[in-house]
Every structure is written in structure tokens, then in C-alpha cells.
Image (cartoon, rainbow, N blue to C red; front, side, top):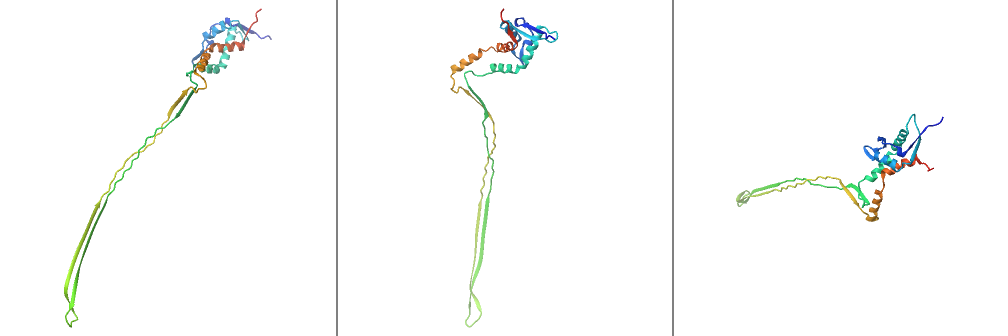
Length: 221
């Protein structure tokens, strides 16, 4: 049983929504650009593939093109991001860090006190002198001295004090951004590299991959 094939020339490809390559709503290559590149850059190239059922050549082309772009979509998206990311072309060092701290503190203390003292001393007494008469065994008072003394000591003192403060500790993180030119490459060299990068035609690079994988260029007769 002979396998039926379809052949289509790239300049005969017509506009179709399937020619658009996009990722989550972001267009990587528009359908208009795809059609323009196929018709005008690779117009003399041919795609030859087994057809399914009653496919037309254009339907065969769209089936193969759609499978190819789905299979490679992640790679195309990475290429697109690399060309559209925000950066400074004259800097080759860019580092972000998180860190830092902030301390706040206070202490609270309270104290007070007082002292009091009192002292009183009291003393009393008497002295009696006695003598006896001649040839008598009894003694009679001759003189008597009485004394009384009192000492009072009252001491009062008070000591008081008050001290206050408050202490708390809080840690907060801060972002640090360090960037610039570390010196191994001059600004002129980086500017030249940026210009060379911008010479890349992403749409042409991507569609070219498809053409080189599935199409061929007929030899001139």
C-alpha cells in the first residue's frame, strides 16, 4: 500500500491563527511575522509529509507546525525572556540580599524604702550610810543620798528612691542591592556585546529552526 504524501511550498502557506507562537498570553512570534518569514525568506523551500485522511497540503503543514511549536514552546519562551529581561547593559554584577537589624530597648525598675529608730534610757537609785552608837550593836542611819538619771535617744532616718526604665528588642530585615561593574570587562566591551545581542532576530531564529528541521530546498534543474 502506497503512503500518500502532501507537498507544500513555503510561499504557498496562507495566513492562519495557528502560525502564532505564544506563551500564556504573551506573543513570542506573531502569525504575521511567521507568514512573512516563510513566504519571503524560505519561499523556495518545500515541506513533504504523510497526509492523514483527506488533508490538504496546508492542513498537513499546520498539523506538523503546531506539534513542533508545542513541543518547543518552553525553549522559545526562555529565549524570549532572555531578550526582554530588564537589566543595565553596562553592569556585570547584580546581587540582592536580605538582612539587617534594628534594636530598641528599655528597662523598668522601681524601689523605695525608709528606716526609723528610737531609744530611751531611765535609771534611779539611793545610797544610805549608817553608824552605831557607843557600845551598841544597832546601826542608825547617818546620811542618805538618792539619785535618778534619765537618757533619751530618738533617732529617725528615711531613705527612699525610685528608678525606672523599659527594655524591648525588635529585629527587622532589610533588602540590600549591590550592583555595578567589577572591572574585568570594560564598559565599551559590554556595550559592544549588547549591540551584538540586539542583532538577533528572534522570530527569524525560531521559524528558521522549523524550516531546517522539516523542509528542504530543491536543486535547480
